[in-house]
Image 1 (cartoon, rainbow, N blue to C red):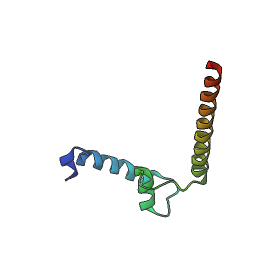
Image 2: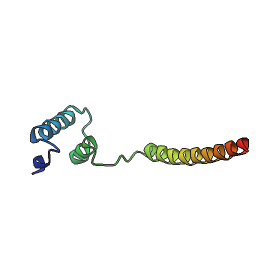
Image 3: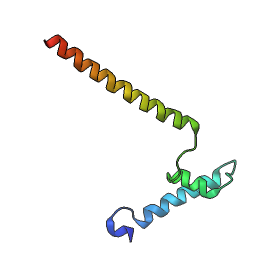
Image 4: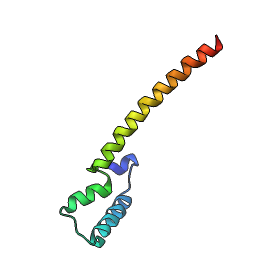
Length: 82
């Protein structure tokens, strides 16, 4: 059914799933949950790494600082042009 929309072909999905299953088979230390392994490699599961959350917070802070600097720059340019 999804093929009707041209999103994925069955062969593409099958090939990708096969690749992930081979990666699971070749994993030296087997994960506790094969399903979680599949979700992680397919991208369906959010990473549970605290480092990722810290980086997201840092990006949000940097965006705020960037916006503040842009605003300050705009005000200073306005003063210079007066």
